[in-house]
Length: 375
Image 1 (cartoon, rainbow, N blue to C red):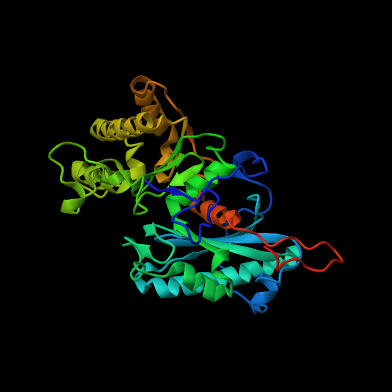
Image 2 (image 1 turned 90 degrees about the horizontal axis):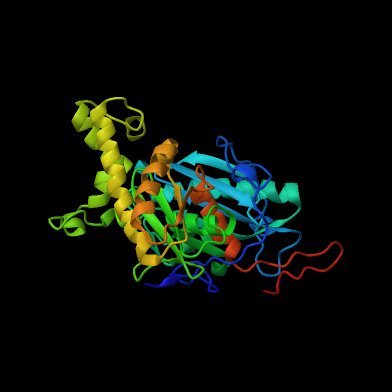
């Protein structure tokens, strides 16, 4: 597998690395400032892009970064200092049925407005933009992203660079789960752990692997797509259009199987608290099946720590207990299993982390000429 990043530029490499970022994190997943949340506001008149987005030779004041998380239903945008301190944020609907072009256009409009407000508040400039989405995200295009029509083959990095009037090297794009692992490694629950795993349990499932200070991308950017793991010898898996482990253990699969069992529509999160003994047995079996595969992964890479995020962590005590029990008995050197730090906005933090890894324009001192043109 190819490792992601290290000292290479995430905008041009096949991934991103995990340097020793400064700045210890505060409690409850915050770094001070304003957390990325809130309703979409109507953007006002924006300054010219060069006043708030620093191209070479144009930066003044303290630099900050902008992150965009393109989700299947929501888009989140935030600005932050390079140490991860969130400065401001907005959210808006993806409107996936309307296609990718409008989603990117509206996100850029909101991001431009947010950057302008942050620049006005701080007197600084935006030095880099990071963006994440589901699917296999390559430097030049997006692959295997079925949730938003038109997203596949979208030249996301080039589109953002043009829309923000930034040099291409100041825009980084990546897979949302792998970027979230980068954020957890820089600022969160995986900091200082290597090898480590970020396990995302939601509508789907995925694992992002931190090894040798890097998040693994794989030869095709698909490392850690454990939803495609086979459950038994009879499974055909991807060749049959199936994702065996995801269908059995992820939220989408649990909801479908719970509905079949109960004879009514079932929500995966609700199944975790359903008193019906049949439902409890089904959920326990799914969690143990998942735990077996996670234990195998932990054995394979000799993981030091596993952090878990995603919607199913609303039932964290049950999820953690199941994984810890199996891993404790099955793995020769059991890793520590903990909740991820960024349970609510992991992908957005990942986008910010991608941007924070890019080379930044120097901060100009008061009364001094700008050094922004120097790398």
